[in-house]
Length: 207
Image (cartoon, rainbow, N blue to C red; front, side, top):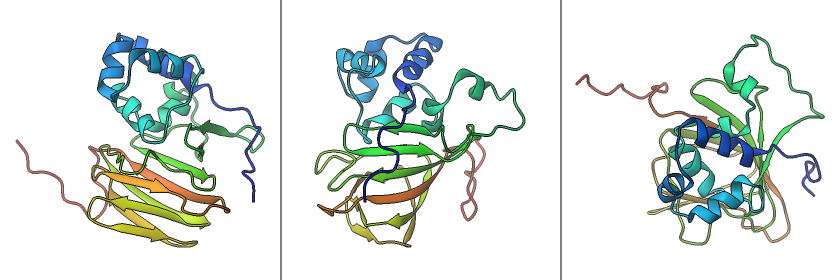
């Protein structure tokens, strides 16, 4: 099965990254150093010359003090001026990665503290190179709706087949991949921003 969103117009998140960086009055070098890439590599991402990997994108958002969902969003969406926002199926908020992964935001506009999106993984697509782990503040929960995803932590590997779900602290270093050389994999994810306390977790003691 092919990616149904292939060929559709993508969100210009390079321009969004540049706008957020300038709003924060940060230089290319400052953001690039926080992410672990060169200033020229970040410039290429901002100009749409190259695409970031799944591993790098949360780091870019974190360096900018933004949520992942904000990189999908226009200035009007971020402002929250509309109380009701509708996004039609013909105009999805899509973001393609260099590693064969496409994100699709599932909310019409960003929601405070929460990102909800679908990820579509090409055969053998991965969040980064083997042995490269990513981590970021918050909690994640996901369900695989098609194919298989492999989620590696430093001390264990979890294989998720169709219908399987997982919840974990996303500060734990992790690596995702589609192990199949033939099938696409699709999963729906909820990212809960660090700071708000999810159900089942205790708030930290006061200072």
